[in-house]
Length: 522
Image 1 (cartoon, rainbow, N blue to C red):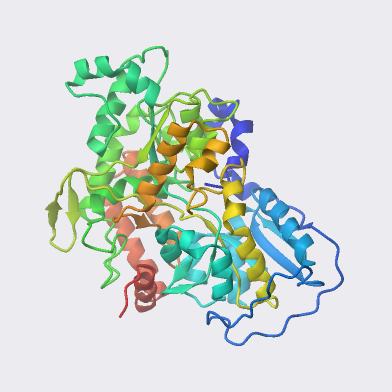
Image 2: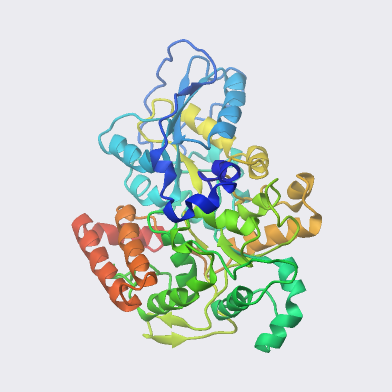
């Protein structure tokens, strides 16, 4: 994913000392000094563009060298993961004659600062690198300029996977964003441990040991690897996941709940798309939380306090037989501190043996487990505010950063925060050229593509008020996992809170935005 990637090597040695007390370290980061790639005279404002929300009304600046002489383009984004973007922006600046200033904002402050500026018509940047969860506020709220056709073409629009074109970069059928990052949570397993322990597993369970297709299989595998000594390893646990509140607990739970609660015949997931009534306390979500609580004991000690970094390091450090994480595990398994290089299996997240059909009001099943890959966080992407005085230059830069060549290099470069989500970044040859064995490169990219192309995939919430919805849900999940409340009681309380949030923000408006995010009309 992301903003955490820069931390993993430095934290590996001290993980055991801090796991139980870790919080969201990004929120404590200091504001970095703005970086300027080149000196330039005071820019002359470009002409005002009429109705920047209408695609195609921003003239194509062409490709002539020096086409933006004297123009300064300001980029704002999350501190700590913009070094690669700065380098590429400097290349663009040298070719166009523009100056690029990069303002880094601590991750924990980014959304609030962007919303505060835009809601008061205060300039913050010409290009904003932001997470997809804010899409409902920014695109649905009318703050962003629509992407002109020429920018879409330069970013190879057709090479972007459909789920990102429709759900990350567009809103209400209008394209706004330029691509950067693609996120989906996946299933990882220790292929070497599965092979070495296959006979012992079959003797203990009566089943062949294979990568889990369902959460019930996943639980059985986790139990075995926790309760039995691994062949060739003194210590190990059956799983590592993401339950920590105020970190990635939302993504950890939703990845599991999607298989139980996303019916293939219904576009809704978080809410009823006709009424905006929360669905998070229906039988599907409740069973998902109950089943999650039953397997937490198969994780490393202190796992309830595990966020992104603790999860990732536990897996690449060899402590867990299975992991639920974003695509970063693949590249991280090749790192100098990894003990699992060449020993990782890749696949979509497991599904549920049964799912709750909210329309029929009953449990249902199909041919095999119900899978619903969850695009948690949804990825970073670049937007251009309608208030920019340099719309053409901003989209020229954003489309350059989102071009196939730039993204392909970013995907295989450590610390960029870029996961695959385009044809260029999912090209097997790209990963082979980066040093991956061809069979592993194919397994990794096939797993990502299978997740992103799945017809029942769930894109993360894109609604105003998302942080409040998230916090209410994470509180409920943490209370259930710690035994303070039953899953049903905890989720009932969260659903009541969701209704309060929705009513305060305006149920009709929230419903409109939710339906637009789902691609529903009327």
